[in-house]
Length: 354
Image (cartoon, rainbow, N blue to C red; front, side):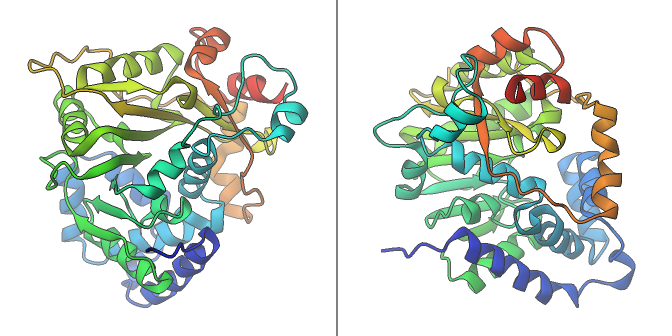
């Protein structure tokens, strides 16, 4: 029987792990920021990004340190926020204060529907594969104890193992490439991929990813994905991605799929996209990938003066908001309310804050 390590305990372990790593980082890499390293990696194909971190000894260590410190930031970081939102959405229960108070009687917005076995419980009861696990963010924040995680960067994998060692968790983390054949058999009850699969750059990579996900899942296994705001330009693009999943043997769970947005503060709105699907069959033998089924190289216009010049706000003052109140706009409602409008800060804010 596994004993659950709480989210708070996991955050404490992250702080201790960051302190342990800090002294080993070469001085000339310490000024490198989390967003700067991420920017370098996103701009390169996977193999070149890996080569960059391998050649520049110590850069990967700074990446792991910055992930623990800035990417998580005690719950304020973007990666932590995304996993917190996912955990909330997968509970399958309605918070009355959100439905009746913050957004009363808004027909287009709803929390995830009540279900016999909430998705979060299915994740906790089953064996989960975390694709692109980084430092184990999804397992830590969702309080999962039966996870196999893999990532391309060895320093992130080692950091994940260190955090779990400190926290007393028993998940397993290994180095592997999501663009190649995943080194696992059909043993998992769920595959999760948080803020990662939008890095798939070609149709072949898309096909390989979802074929791998299907292959390692048991029958009726769950596929849970989150995508950042900047990877989806409009509701039509999101619909195209969802439609393509049927090709790979997945049925969308409509009441748990859509756009997730925070309702803490209209000036610090967070949003992302969530997909929950179930494996219903093997992929089609001759897979034809619709060109619309892709994660395009786009940058969604954020506006609100680029959200007050993002970096300026976070670089000169301590983050003040921990997002912890979220709503789900289902795919159908998103299409009705957004139409073909770009999904900007103003569009999303108007949906959830009116």
